[in-house]
Amino acid sequence: MIITVAICTLNRAESLRRTLESLASMQLWDDLSWEIVIVNNNCTDHTDEVISAFVDRLPLRREFEPQRGLSRARNRAVETAKGDYIIWTDDDVVVDPGWLAAYGKAFRRWPEAAVFGGRIIPKYTTPVPKWIAESEAILWDTVFAGRDFGDEFLPLSEMRLPYGPNFALRATEQRMFRYNTDLGHAANQRRRGEETDVVMRILRSGASGYWVPQAQVEHCSDATQQTRDYVARYFATCGETMAFNERPAAPLLFGVSRWLWRRLAEEWVGYQIHRLVSPAPVWVKHFAAYWYISGQIRYWRHHKEMASTAV
Image (tube, rainbow, N blue to C red):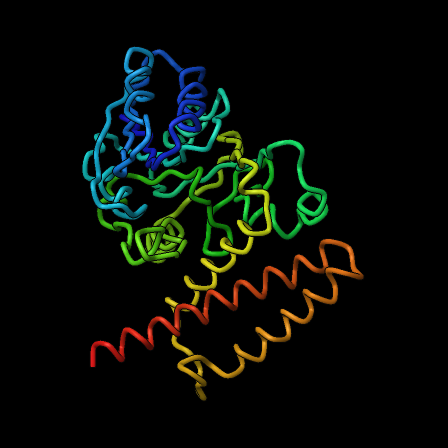
């Protein structure tokens, strides 16, 4: 069995260095056959220098995807991966010393399974803004990609999905189900969910999957990601993704469902009022909902303009 660890990166050289340091510190078994594929998604920083610094410490190779877009970079990794399984992680992650070993044991225990996922623990940059800490119940498993289904092995399902910084797919299914380039971040495209889309399609095909609690990573955020601007952008991209996957309900106003305009106004008023009189979890909930709806509206407004241009 060969295992491929795949990382797609874009202008996060020093964050990638931290990730590679953690991979170099893992506990490995003697007969492990593995590789690391790092896809440079047309970086303009010193990413290649960082990769070169680890070629003598890790079984890695660099691939290049000139067209920016996370789904395109992921598909490039799939095309070049040599492994029987592909473990996906990100360039802002620190893996646990037993991370790779835990996945390897799971692959051997459930050879019939095609999907695996592990625990993701958000790691904040200090000092953590007070409103972030107080609103962790809202932001932990959304903005900061936390994932924890407990300490027991569990079957995965559409209601229990792994997240992008820490999941694994059997290569046979991964090559059948590629990443949708209409999802994921790209130039002039602000969407998410390319990895959950693939996982759901694999599970819907009849494949099985398992939660692997010992396969743990820390997902590191920096100070720029612990701001209201970043949280707003996050929920707006989630809203745009939802709109992309659904049709607007009639009647429409300026190409957008009328009820969305009403909800947008309600959430904005709720945010403005509760920001002054309520604890952070209350106003953050309205803030997140406002930007989520804004993302939906942005998509449908742009979709209407594109349709008009085409005519």
